[in-house]
Amino acid sequence: MKLDHRPSMIILLLMLGLALAMPGGAAAQCDCVSGNIGAAPNTGDPALGTWKYTIDLCWSSARGLSHWDLWIEDLTNCTCTDLQSAIVFGSEIGTTTSEDGCVTHYSREWRCSGEPSIDVPGILIKFEPASGCEPGHSGTGVFYFYSNLTPTPISTENPPYGFVINKNGNGFCNGSLSGVFPGIPCDPVPMQDGSWGAVKANYR
Image (cartoon, rainbow, N blue to C red; front, side, top):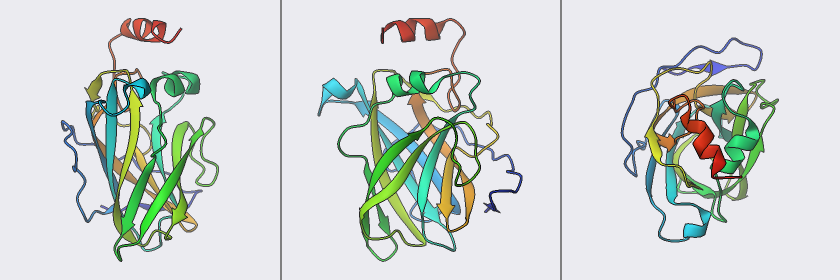
């Protein structure tokens, strides 16, 4: 079900399906936006992290895609510093291909104090078009990040926002995220109490 919002409207909860991720998990057509994250050992550039994570994205909206956000944390379990230590980006951020075949290359930006353009609090990673064509009304994308933390199945528990957000024009809509994520005590991944201290020690 598509949920379109204006920034001042209350955001409805969205249920996430639990799935073990495989590359290419996002469908070619989807309602609003959805994503699937897969992970594989990083053999290309191990200095970036033990694991290479791949986000398969799809979107569909009445307006073109202004940018999309990966909503990670509600500020109760992790700090932005924790997340920036655990998640690393390489030189290749990702691309989308619109319905007409136009390819767009993206930049990324940490939003540690929320996303003011859509009035969403918390910690997000904003993916914004940097070069190429302007994204169309629908399409698919592939994005990459790295981590030394082991892939963990995404929780079925809901944050107050969809884990992926499609910003289009003056509004936005939420979508679901399935697959795996680095094992940190932030939504969308739960972690056993006591294990985060050992993880953090690896980055001191």
